[in-house]
Amino acid sequence: MIVRIMGEGQLDVADDRLAALSPLDDEVEAAVEADDEPAFRLALVVLLDRVREIGTPVPDDVLVPSELVLPAADANVEDVRDLFREGGLIPG
Image (cartoon, rainbow, N blue to C red; front, side, top):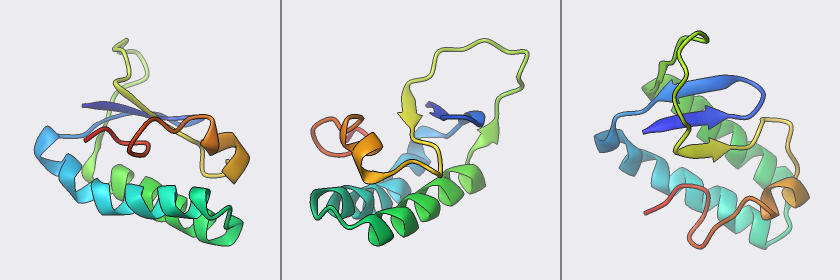
């Protein structure tokens, strides 16, 4: 799955690694629902770090559509609330 981190670029994350992101996505979602900015910021940083860790960067000169868009590390709860789809940022 091609994942874009807003303001950074794209990473190719193998489909079999997406399940590892689900608990981290749940933490982001819970923090947004609780309107808990400090917990949200921590959970988002952990999620983004994990995506960077397991993903392979897509070269800037390669054009591929993003299947998933994650907010930038400096996003706030209100920014992300608008990005949520049912079930969190990561489908599934």
